[in-house]
Amino acid sequence: VSVRSAAGEDSKNERVVQRSYQDLQELRQVHQYVVARELEGGDGDWIGAERKSACLRAFMARSRNRAIPSSLQKQVEASLAGMGLRTMKEVIDEDSGYSIDILVFMDADGSDTSAGAADSTLGFGEGTLVRAGQRAAVALEVDGPQHFALPENRIPLGNTVMKRRHLRQLGWRLA
Image (tube, rainbow, N blue to C red; front, side):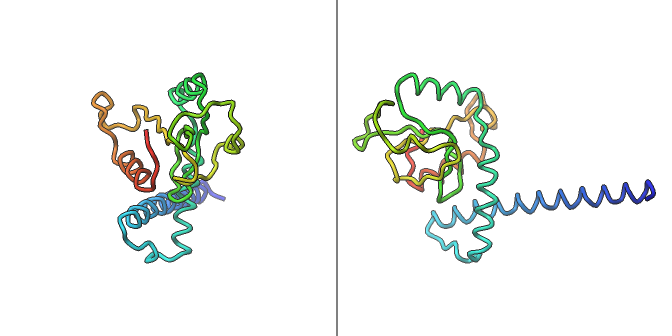
């Protein structure tokens, strides 16, 4: 194997990896479009069930892989636990594939629920699939400076705005 052919193979492999990454990115973007279209009363079936499922899987894989709590999020979780509130961290909305930083569980009347109360929701772990309205909870997004174009003015990036809008449209009480 000559140096030239080895370098050529590396370049080819790099292009394949880059194309695979672009394909996944495109699937995730198509998924967000499908979610937006369905939430606005449109039909999501135009894409076909198999392709729609592939888009959701690509989106959820990224949600799961990026679910690494920041130090700010860990501080918020500790504060909520210190207040005696029950929480679940890094859950995924089953309908959209969006990751939710923290769910804070509430009683049916909207009051907080103490950590000592018996509830099957305590058995769920990170990456659990949940649906809005499935249980009384507030979805808490801990948005650090990377979520903002101008952090000092709190102007959120487009993907942050879209995620918030989609979660609200799905029925989540978002804080």
